[in-house]
Image (cartoon, rainbow, N blue to C red; front, side, top):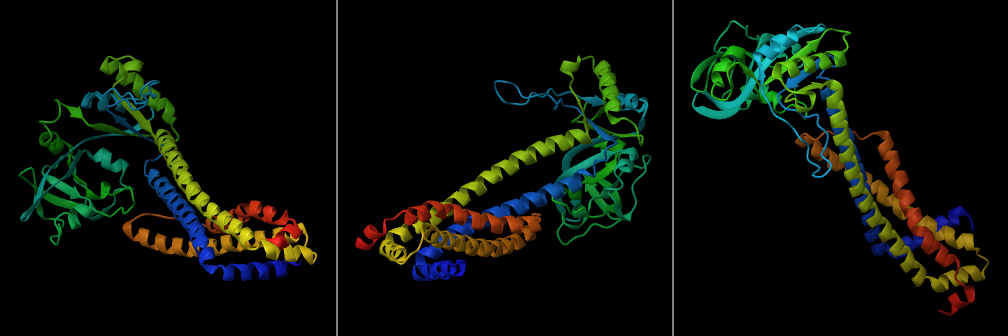
Length: 405
């Protein structure tokens, strides 16, 4: 039997049992849609995060008042994290370390913000100019300017804070807003960053560091700093600077290396941490896709087994007129492959429309050529593999017994 004959025979059988065939195809469609949508979104999220991690340049370090680098405990599986406090003297000490270009200080908290007749609660950061200079490539001024360290009661608003927070009332440069009942003059508006992880950065309000100290005085100890941002010289060894910062702060805080109450975070650490999370997420999503695929394969196998039972006499006739075992197997394998391919093509189309919908909700995706090819090969392979056992069962039928059935 020629390949084209097997193909025509398979198509005829699919048409004959069209209802069962379409129910089986739906199972394949579900598996392909799950595969394409989950893989595309996973790829999109990973690329989006990779782009945003570039905002944290390789020569940047951040010192935070919590030890987050401790390993997981053997029994509880919970991360142990000692908390402490950072102070202005810590920032001053870090400035003296060779290879450090600049040190920025920042305090933050949520407080009441009022403009015209509307009042909300929003995040406010008290920063010095050194902190802004380190991130001016990421936080770009759209209108106005950044404040000076010597200024008081001035503010720079992120784009959403200026254009979304207060509904139809847009905040512009020169307007007066109230932060915790105190008047602040708006001197600048940031450009919108607009990435999936920048929602908070697009909503912040920045004020001078000294204003931040006054604003959060009841939340902080004297001269306390929430975190310290460090920029190393170009070409400097970041790991060496990290070690130097740790040694100096361990001495200042009078703790041992095992008891340290702070962490120095580098770009490599963030990349490693995020990479681990994404690997776990990808594994979980792959498991979901695998389950959906197994469901589709079971549906195809069931259809093929039913086809063997219903066409036993027909198989006997084919063998009686000279059809070989391979001829019989090829008919069922081609039929199961066609079901898989049809499900794959329709699944791709449906997945594409689903991705067009989710992107409107800010979910990134990347539909690469390899995903499309893999989905088609995957669906055809699922069809073939699911049809192997029924095809072998059909090929082994005794022609005499088959004709008697």
